[in-house]
Image (cartoon, rainbow, N blue to C red; front, side, top):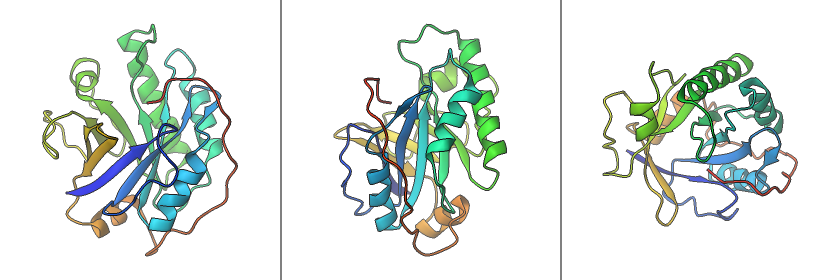
Length: 208
């Protein structure tokens, strides 16, 4: 098992990457919000040479394609970057059917736009068992279940397991070693160079 974390605007830009094989960074939410720290948080991951993923938090009532395009236009992707839908919708007045439709549309659109990158689904155990009906998760499942690391209480194969949020979101990856993770992600070099990008805008929204 490999260790990793996920960060949003609530976490610092200079988080410690010591002992980590990967990090997931929140980039966008809804149709307009951009995490103002994501570029600097990406720089920390690039400097450490670890596999980097980027995720979007949805507003299910909106168009999944429009939100996906908002997410993608922020990114300047490097080989091996992983793209993720943070499939949760706390406080949103939407049906389970709408959530499923959004999920499938977002994953499909992002995969079509970025065929050379892994596209995965983040989902908590309750939504996976109670809302999902077809087990579709594009290139893999990142499951949240706060239990023993590496032992989420689901039967479906998983790639990443978020097992704690104390003091920050902690994860493990179901790969034998860092090279296996890098090969799966599509990293082509031993180090991922920093790439330029614009800073995000501030907005008062819920972080996922």
